[in-house]
Length: 79
Image 1 (cartoon, rainbow, N blue to C red):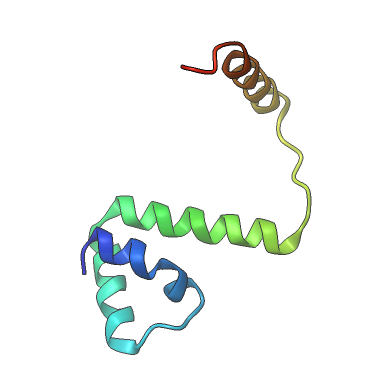
Image 2 (image 1 turned 45 degrees about the horizontal axis):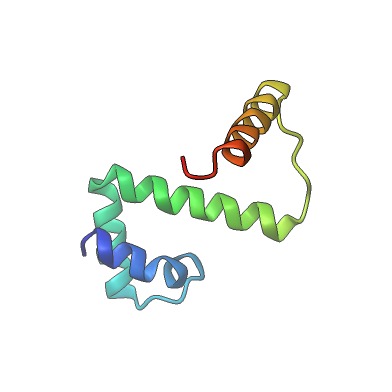
């Protein structure tokens, strides 16, 4: 399994719908590839957030940086 394979199978993996052999290949790749592990972890976390439908209070600093970035993007949409 390579990185493209992980991306192709990530939904099936997180849903527990992979055949055992493919799951083992994917998990072996995750043990060796930090980038793919981060993608899987973040995807799982994002799904958990949306499934719980709970709003998450952002820290003030993060909220401020996000608003500033959005304002810059609105003022300069081509950047």
